[in-house]
Image (cartoon, rainbow, N blue to C red; front, side, top):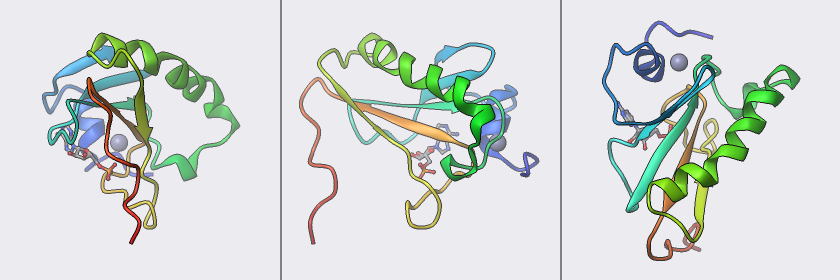
Length: 118
Ligand code: AMP
Ligand code: ZN
């Protein structure tokens, strides 16, 4: 796993600025630079993990904590009546940044349908 040229590692280290939503020892949340919904932030592990496909049981704790926290952060950001998490993974998932992150997308209004049917 390479962290040298990883944009999210640079954000974790404070070398690239972000609009922070939340931070603790293991997790950082910040607004997506190109939001696609009224609420759109990312939650990243501070440890560089390439993707969801690179997790193992060592990561169960931090990933569990991430899942448990998301609804509170979404509500804090104004999405009080639900939200969506998206985790693009690998080539098929059209992942662009290979540092594990989940997108948290929210309203106030309902989001569009998940994936347009062809
Ligand atoms: P993906 O890897 O496909 O899940 O998408 C990566 C996401 O990271 C995109 O939604 C980008 O807009 C977002 N992104 C890329 N660079 C930055 C940055 N410097 N700050 C905040 N968000 C970013
Ligand atoms: Zn990284």
